[in-house]
Length: 466
Image 1 (cartoon, helix red, strand yellow):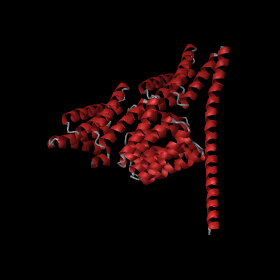
Image 2 (cartoon, helix red, strand yellow):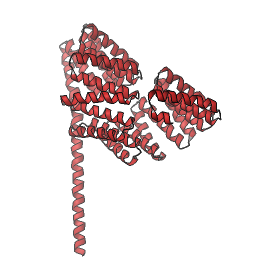
Image 3 (cartoon, rainbow, N blue to C red):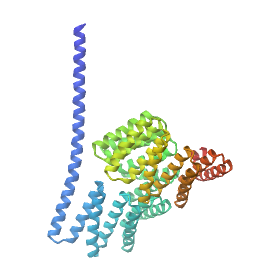
Image 4 (tube, rainbow, N blue to C red):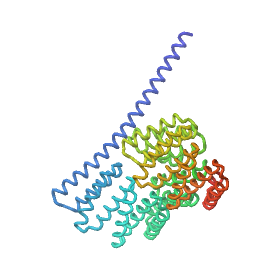
């Protein structure tokens, strides 16, 4: 019996050693891939820096401009947006001097993309408009399409949805005329995004399906994955959770096959979002943790912050407020370190919500005020409105009715200006609630009716039932 016990222990020892060995092998493999990717990025930059040096020595301004443009692209893809802007500006200066309109347009497009990714939307719009103007003059339909897509992206992110739709439709029209299926698929994906952001989920799904069809036909797995992710997000927001899971899983499968860790992380986020929306918190946590693991391995601090925000959300929804706060604080630390004011504001808004739900009203006010301050500085009216709504909610719970009304009215004013019907509805609901709490039932009914009217118009059943 004793011998049998020793043999069992020995077997367990072998098994543990084997598992440890496998984990080490897996870690070393991942580390090798990460080092290779890092080395590849460094090599690319070194190559273009060398090309730039040679072009300068030879006084070849055409090649010098090309090198600056390539360095801008490499820096942008490496998420070093300020560096990218610097390179594009240098390319633009030479292109203008030489009256090289092709390179000038490329520089404007690069600047537009870098500024958009750096959350400078108005500046991005300006650059894309300049690129569009030159492309039209030169009848360069490829660059014209790129300018429309870039302009659409900047307008969409700046909540100018109608303008974004027009830009994408013009890009789509040119792409179809030219039988450019790559640009056509891009236009369909962007139209899907803009309609999804504008809560028109059925229309968004239609466009994502058209993008998916082209991507499959062309065996373009990058666009196919993006279409699946878009469909997953649209179906989740449209409360079609099972369908959303199916699409996110298809995106995940392709991303893993292609060893595309960026898309793999996005698929994990998509799955985490679906399961948290469907109150399957344990499963959601598992997916956010997988996204976090990859983001840390890849040293992708943007996605790491998003993973912490996702984990904060799911713990908040599960009423585990202390754990939620811990994750939000980790997200905040990274956002501050990276000077990413967009993410920093998001974290403050989320901390405001969790402290309000945990009845720490003074702390909730502090975080919403911090969010409001940054949003005003950055002229980010979307986040400014969210901060006003947050403050209205906290003061309402604290029975400071007049102050709550003031904040909800400020939120309402901006939402109307921006034609943001989602936030407008939330402001009406907040005003209805606060007047009801103050026993001013007639006024409360008036605001609830206005919220209901918009919800019916938008076919937003979630807001309608609230």
